[in-house]
Length: 207
Image (cartoon, rainbow, N blue to C red):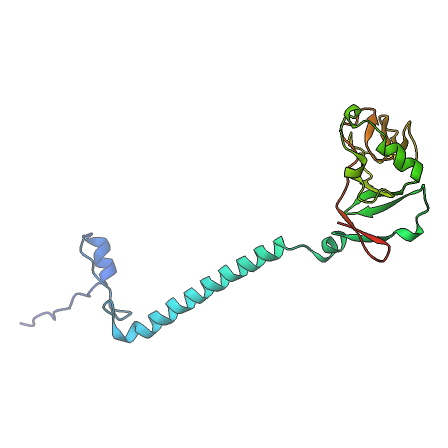
């Protein structure tokens, strides 16, 4: 009698066995790769390389973020140029007013006459809506420097006009005297006085 040849049953991969017979035990399929125990000495160099590279990338990202933040906080060149402005006062005639631009706003520079100074100093401060003496508003009595913006709604008043000889805002009828103080009309405050410094060469630096 001829015995039939025994045929070996094919061994299914571990993944197939796991799908057919679900179990809580972990079975590794070593058919296509090698399995190394945790902490294998041959893999330490690779682990150090990955960790060091990751830390370097992380530190570089933080440095870039900090630099961008600091650059966004610093003023640009055009802003620095407008931060202050110098004006030559020698060309301004007595009794006249010139208007310059500073930080996007008009600034009035008025060279006052002796009579205008006397009138400004003689005003009863207690009668003013926004009480200020003339000396509080003019470092040098001859020169009055204010922002050219009406404190009512931000219009630009007209110089050498109004009932008090200073400025008049035609939009809503606010009258300012030669010290830039509100005397009549709806404006609640005096014309704002910016920070300025007189220079030795006959100039003034605003801002």
